[in-house]
Amino acid sequence: MFRQLKEDIACVRERDPAARSSLEVLFLYPGLRAIRMHRRANFYYRHKMFFLARWISQRASRKTGIEIHPAVKIGKGFFIDHGTGVVIGETAEIGDNVTLYQGVTLGGTGKETGKRHPTLGNNVMVGSGAKVLGSVKIGDNVKIASGAVVLTDIPANCTAVGVPAKIVKCDGVRVSDLDQVHIPDPVAQEISRLESEIESLREIISKGENI
Image 1 (cartoon, rainbow, N blue to C red):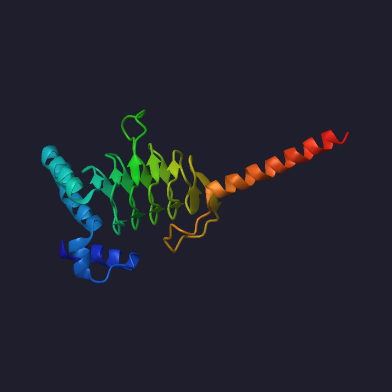
Image 2 (cartoon, one colour):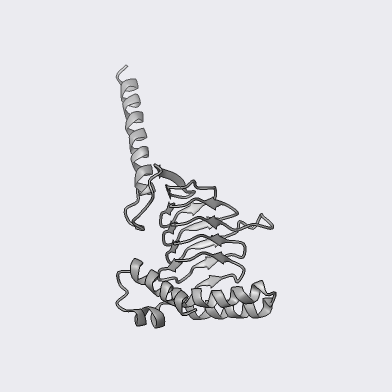
């Protein structure tokens, strides 16, 4: 248990430049607290003590603003930055070295039964406010931009942006810098496309007037 705690703290200090000390991370980081409480809840859930498991998870939600269903399977090196508003549904599965930012939802669509929440591979980064919905599979080393809504599978080594999310980069190169800033802006891209179409229509109208 102590070794696991040391690994969790090291994970936070590695990915959050604002973390000044291990004590600060241990006592003041809601993401770390939520993960620690989830492990206890998951233990009781796996041993069919469902009421106790849900009681711990709901208590964690009230204290941290992070709601993780006790049945969720989470790998090592999991990091929730800031954390407020994060929701992770019952059948979600999370691989190793995954990072979630505030406001992320790994939820269902309301139309599925059984496996109805996402599966995230290793080294995935999900930007703030992003929603990944349904029993979709997110491959290893995927980046999901802030505010994106993912409704379909994303292959490994890709970057997805927009609503609904579209792949804008998939070159097979492993993502080594977990960064939610340097990602193309889908709104700016769409505005540029519309401006190009408007200019084309103006040229057509101008030619028609000169006939």
